[in-house]
Amino acid sequence: MLQEKPAYTLDAFHRGDFWLVQPKGAGHRAGVDAMMLAAAVPSTFAGRLADFGAGAGAAGLAVASRCPEASVILVENAPEMADFASLTLEHEHNTHLRSRACVLVADVTLTGRARERAGLADGGFDYVIMNPPFNAARDRPTPDALKQKAHVMEDGLFESWIRSAAAVTRPRGGLAVIARPVSLAPILAALAGRFGSAEILPVHARADTPAIRIVVRARRASRGALTLRPPLVLHDGPGDGFSARADAINNGKAALFGD
Amino acid sequence: MLQEKPAYTLDAFHRGDFWLVQPKGAGHRAGVDAMMLAAAVPSTFAGRLADFGAGAGAAGLAVASRCPEASVILVENAPEMADFASLTLEHEHNTHLRSRACVLVADVTLTGRARERAGLADGGFDYVIMNPPFNAARDRPTPDALKQKAHVMEDGLFESWIRSAAAVTRPRGGLAVIARPVSLAPILAALAGRFGSAEILPVHARADTPAIRIVVRARRASRGALTLRPPLVLHDGPGDGFSARADAINNGKAALFGD
Image (cartoon, rainbow over all chains, first blue to last red; front, side):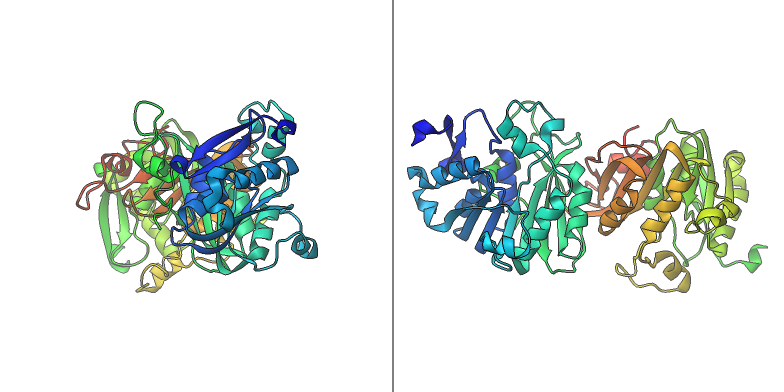
């Protein structure tokens, strides 16, 4: 049925270990953000992981690719993006991951019984990762409606997403979030009383410029203190090439937090 | 009257540009934290600056030493520490700073009229710096009552200190705070609606270990977005010596935020 769908591209991740079917020139296209988010999950992770706002499935599949005992549920509310996630899972290049991945069309901001009925059971997951829609409208023009839908930040977005993550994560289970530094305060406010042992890892394009992203990890029902990790620097040479560490993380060869 | 006072030491800062009279082996002793906090103030700063929780005056005098058009008010609530601040100002090595510094014995957690009567007028300052008592009780033993008084973190400490800072700072005036990373969430919560354009600068003992301090700067009544600066690394060699940048900051030769 591809002729009825928007034009798509097929993009390799983790040096070809898995591929993504993505809308061509439209919507939010997965890239380094999704790979860094996935790299926040410990390499030894085993269990059920939910990828909130999964898009075409990049972050969740990157976890499945690196963690052989992980099973991932790609949770996406936009039907057009969930279709791409399904096409991604059906693709012949991803056969080896298919038994450990599925797509769930659901709104992660639902609450209570409605959330359970949508397929997100309380305490049903060992880990939640999320790459919520950034308000990149401030960063760059939004040439089409799909991209706008993915990028418009709503008030209370982190509160509602993290509230749901807390509900579906078992005690001592994990959470990882990638966001812009401007979202640090709402993220920490949303973690309070729900997740502890928070670890913040700043991501800088270059060593001497402000952070462009933060990755925040935390543990459900933990009382451990917040820590601030040394940053990841994406580019350390004169050109646009990745630093060795960023390249390893981007390709599923290293864990962002070293575990 | 020194014979009636606790034993004291006389310690050089900024390579001897000013000296501190401090209690010997008792109370909170000033050091690198105070110098980093002072270095957060732009080198071009001119105006009235309040040092909340000034102790013997290290951070405030470091600003006066580096910024020739700054006048500093050392605000300290513990009379025994305020006495040391006064002795510091009276000391012959600090004659050149005396006309631009004074001591105010006041509780910065006062509110409303009581705070004004204590000498902290609404909108009366161009900048506030603060090094609130850390709960270092968790970090190390507290061998005496003075140290305990300086180090016991109370619930809501950042809320009350930053609320007062907001009251006494003129619109577009500045705030700088040094704290442990664990205090990031209460600091950001206290800034909300009062200070904007927050800048967080993590301080790491070494490049590969978690941050030991954060320095947070913000601007009164600004709506600018939060930014996360590249970190300061204190030690980069095999020994305990400071990195060149940390040494320059510690000695008043460089600004922490580069301005």
